[in-house]
Length: 487
Image (cartoon, rainbow, N blue to C red):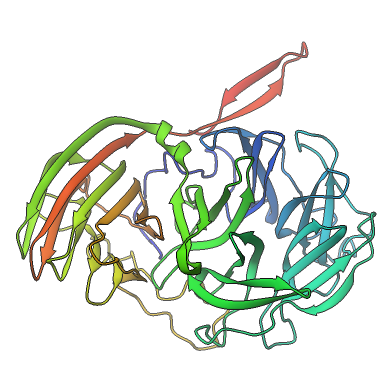
């Protein structure tokens, strides 16, 4: 989605670039839980080159700024990768270094080793790049005495995703095993790549989380054995019109698999932390992290709201653009029903979240999200991976597959943070959207039903406080000072 003229308020409880720092954040990278802290790196630009910024937290809402994880020297830029624990317990960064003619750096996948427990200093291997032609976006880990590293690529091409292994304690010597994927799935388009790969075990499956540049975040479920990934299913986590890109996960001290993604649009930002788990039938559950509940304030609660067919029921007193909404709807007599947020009193601007029973889909409808004609949700996430001359048409709604079980109620959790929407449904679907309303009164909430009646059993809302971002530095006398630098 692009916006050419609307200036949105900065997100309040999503992590974004600190004001006063010359950067727009891109891919999350280097996410790791280490010695009681969540560490999150992210690509941003400085001096026209990509590097990794770095923040950490003990609770996912109060963040501390660190020096950059990685800066581009001698590389021409630092691109995507991950963090992992090596054989000796040290944190190691795996990253793609861009080639640079001025320093004679050939480009390729590289490694850097932490020099301290606070992860403020990383030392790059002198032998970098240790994997010169494996593709891009490495993801590396240590398991059962062996180092493994997978790379991004395009299946079926000369740059297919690959697997490397190493038994070298010095991390210098790597062996190309071969293609990462044993096969491709039938619902993947021919021009989709596998980038930002993240391979991990979830329940009794292995998950290959990744993107394609044209369709955004997605994942394969399958098994990793015999040094190859064997996909059994493929699922989207972003759909045409959506803005969820470049995911990264970590495993925390509670055994939770936590994911962030880059939310495209302006201003660029990270998604909220999402907890992934394996549900029945091999389908992945997706829920927001419980730590976000500490940001709630000003609770409001309503219940038993009847929604007659073909009507729009406005909830007086519930409004805002920085909120969490938890909604339970009985939809079973309606063909379609849902909630409208960021609504003007006259309905000129609004964004509808709609469950369509017969089609088994959940929709975010953007045709009235903004009166600004420069705001255009697009079919493809990016265009440079499309065949030359391909179009990227506008689209009116992002639509995700979603089916309620017989008798199951619709449970929506919606996070609004100015231009960002994240919609969680029944703990097993999540949609990410950018919206840019133009009017100051685009704050209302209403419920609607089509083709039959529905009933809102409960709606619970909170205003959301801001996350914090601080930076520690030494005074001249050697003592420490902390300053708030978020906004």
